[in-house]
Amino acid sequence: MGFTLCSDITLGTLNIKIPWTGLLSQPLEVVLRDVFLLVVPKPTDNYDPEKEEERSLKKKLKIVEKIEASASSNADDSGKHLRNLWQVLKIQNE
Image 1: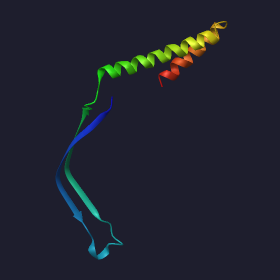
Image 2: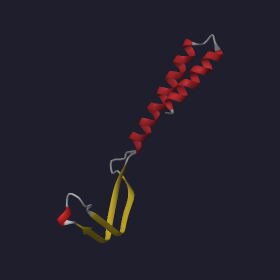
Image 3: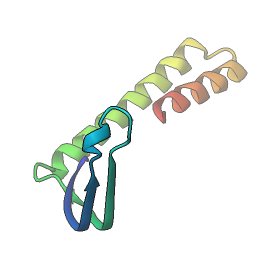
Image 4: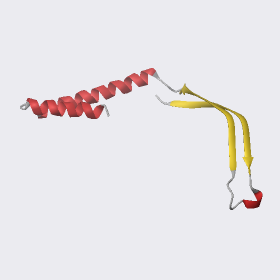
């Protein structure tokens, strides 16, 4: 689920000093005072709990399929099977 940021900005004062006689040799100075920024997460309107549940189930089934494939290909060596199982689970959690 993604989030969209909604913000509100309040600016107290903004001072700009422009050195017109020395634009190329002197710095431009910008001073901001009393700046308040309000940022709040707002959930997206297109969130569908049924689709989220379906996506989660598909992910779990993919993990089970990889575990079963690993188990069938390495059934005779249990130590190797456990290492492969750990690798499958580790990859799925990244």
